[in-house]
Image: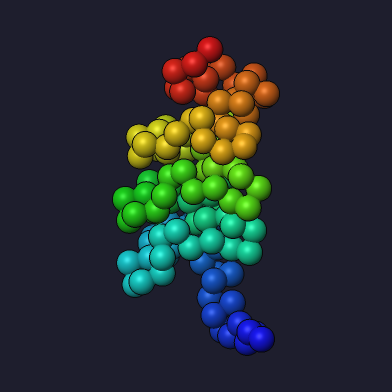
Length: 130
């Protein structure tokens, strides 16, 4: 039988995930620099990078990646941050993830499949596919 999570820890984690969603880079990386894992995930497997990428915060994505976050970490649905950025049409986030080595073919659906699905030809060009 497992213990219930500490409410203070849950509150702190919620605050950190919100910082990623809001793109509050300085505050977010202060927590990471203080010891919060750069690959912290929520109850759906969404990493801080996934949340920042999906919400269009390229600076937060770059900051997390330089602190060791995994650019290709999939969530519980098999989605990658790059696929999330492609879904939202976030060109700057896409560039940041590609610069960090994100794989456009990773995940289900992949970023390539997502870009094709939504006719995001500009992103397909960045991925080097037609």
